[in-house]
Length: 318
Length: 281
Ligand SMILES: Cc1ncc(C[n+]2csc(CCOP(=O)(O)OP(=O)(O)O)c2C)c(N)n1
Ligand SMILES: [Mg+2]
Image (cartoon, rainbow over all chains, first blue to last red; front, side, top):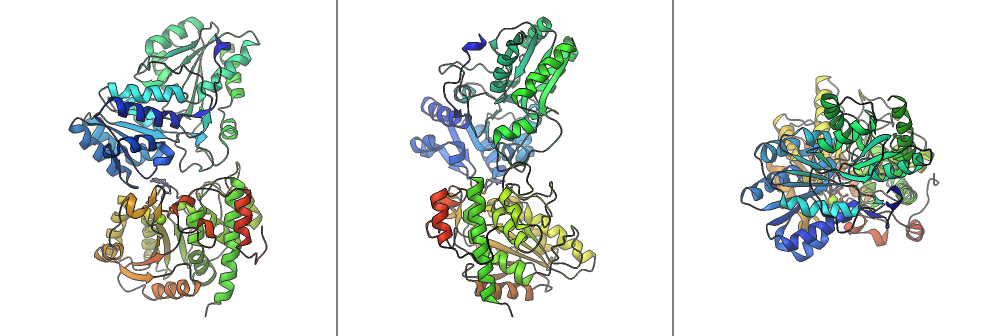
């Protein structure tokens, strides 16, 4: 099963968002889009070209964008906001909290350039706290798809779900390996490869690194159960428990702080229902820096080798 | 009297540094950097009293804050050429394990930087805070800050403007890089700024008009004029018209070079238009 996971050619997840937005724009007239001076970075050009009257440029004013989106949603529109992940969350947290989350507005907060793989722009832009912030907001759905195809499918699927959604994706070209015609089910973990020795729960760009790590340890005779947790909230507790009870060892992998992200979400389930040794692949209470995506992942402990080591370590703790 | 000829020579070298940094990093923001070169050179090599041995608190020194942090290449070059750190370090711009972060940061301890910037709209507030502290300390030096024009779309800037006038923060000189460009296009198309000088005036600021922020003589004269207006109960803003990409013909006057690095051929072309005056790093 692991051998069947192959890269069909690198593409950026943000391009998947752009394609998904255009597709859902064609299918659903209620979908509107907003952007804060980052049209090209968010790949929103196709939507804007075909639906200019349903697009609003708000300039460099993210807080205003969130408020306007809440107003549009109040009248039944389905607004998709587009800016970098940092400016989609931390910059506007209270606007989202009050006008969108607490007021239960159907706004889709779509965030590109998340995490270290943003690269050269450096720590001011590399948010690693966003999933934690967003999953703490009651009623928010938090999604971090792993590749182009999954991001496109998720972008389309969230229009059908009523409620606020945080959709997180990234800047770099990255392996594209999930099915092109997949149906995206919010909250349903995706089993990528069955295994028996360790459960590897990964999200976002880290799913590909997890695939590579699983292939490496397979050669040592370690059987990895690889599960793609594209939805951090609501978390697929059933899938996580079932796998952890079978393998009795867990590794989580995410492009995020250790505090507050996927690892913490998984640990919360396990500690209540099935205490299991767990290793975290995540940034350990540190800011990022400028550099190339892959070298940064390596420096901050998110490389393929780090996952391999975490798998070996957690098995020893069984 | 300022030696305009010398300042122009420095500016030419700084522009070379900007091109070379962004080219070797294959990323970064040459457009705004080139447009603001004359301003930063005049500030650091003529107007400000500052000490390159660098002290965070800057007692008895003039201080500069860059709010539009994406134009880090021009600031890094000016700081290095002023003696804050070796010019050789410019070669590490945007590389891993460097102090030359994509956007200015204090985190790696780069001398000359007092607060991180890059997320737009925050620098003016910080500059006001330090200006207040100078007053509390009886320090009569001046705080300078630079903001982009697109950056003015952020609401926090207007909160800061209101505060500075209300609290009579008159030891503060802010320049607006009024290049009329931002990422998605001309500011008038993205989010029109309207009558900017009238808006600043309505918020209680003293206005200084700088018609050509890429003419060194005018830059120096207007900076001095702004400085002469400090201490009179009002914060001062310089409405500084510049051209994005100034000094490199194919980058000039378009948002297309806001955040795009030149390739090898473009770099050679750009460098052929900029005299090497102080020696490349
Ligand atoms: C809060 C925030 N939103 C968005 C961005 C992305 N961004 C970087 S520069 C820029 C345009 C800035 O325009 P302006 O201030 O006019 O600078 P110029 O393009 O003229 O250099 C934008 C939108 C950012 N850095 N910070
Ligand atoms: Mg501008």
